[in-house]
Image 1 (spheres, rainbow over the protein chains, first blue to last red):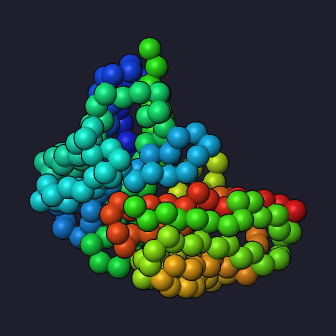
Image 2 (cartoon, rainbow over the protein chains, first blue to last red; image 1 turned 90 degrees about the vertical axis):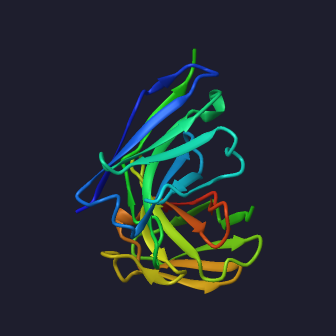
Image 3 (cartoon, helix red, strand yellow; image 1 turned 180 degrees about the horizontal axis):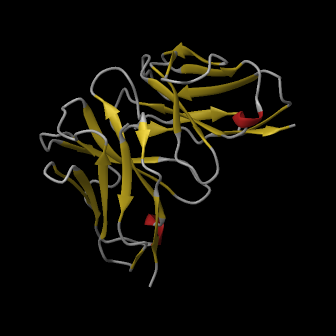
Length: 120
Length: 107
């Protein structure tokens, strides 16, 4: 079955760029049947959708983060990535990757999440 | 941005009882509404999509209803494993947005 796994530094300094990768196993990211998203959750708070990418490289971003976010895909590695620039303490959160079907459905498979702390 | 408002924030229910959770959208999202369950330290799990369709492997005690701006998640008879936080999410408009969550706790 398909699994998603986030990876990347757990600590990022203020003003630097947060970089995370989501590795897809058990299925191909190039299938064309899904969009691939990043979602985050500050401790004790709710969920915020960051953005998504399709196999073609087409992206959609949350306007609240759009100026700082880049999501990219590497089909050869079956991975997609998140870059969030100019981070502050407000970007401290658990970051999840998740897939969303092109057809009927919603975020049906999630990674386990990775905690990222922004601190000097 | 569509604002999703969930109520109540906390729901105290005894095992075996029925739980009814509400979600309201600030504008119509048609039936493009999903419900998720999240337990401490875990990722959210999809329960319902399309406002009323159970996701694969979700027990029949979970049901969703509503359309437009008013939605309900009902858990017909709460089991011990159902005590968790529940989120609604709209995917009708960009950006996708989530409600603030309802915590279902043991009474």
